[in-house]
Length: 186
Image (cartoon, rainbow, N blue to C red):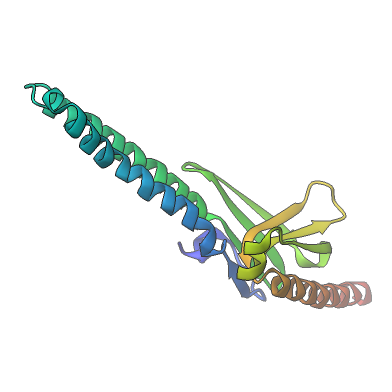
């Protein structure tokens, strides 16, 4: 995905971070996919062992192939949708703003922007032993506005991201304060 097509950068703006969910969060989905892909094989061996006559009929084999194909295609589609949701959730941090690109399902995406100088609070939430050991968690960015709230879900190194966001917001606040002084003097 080309970020230039997704966001319109300002002349003074440059990308600081491109943040995605931690890869470890996709492992349960991949494991579930592998288990669900093995279900038809296990079912075939169980049926052929217990009821060998059931699979000998003239319609049994084509029906079995049809059902197995439909099942496997459905599993591939579900895995693909989950992968697209995982991969296309993206947070872009520039020196001026945060852009939250959230893929809701296959054909639904929302993009939210937040100016860095409006940030009032950045919170890190790490719940559980495994996320603490692997060092991933949620980073919540809040403003005074009640409708603007961005959460970076399951990102790696959340404390570093929080510190960098605070530093970037302070720098952006100074920049905008300098711009306001220039506007008032003109």
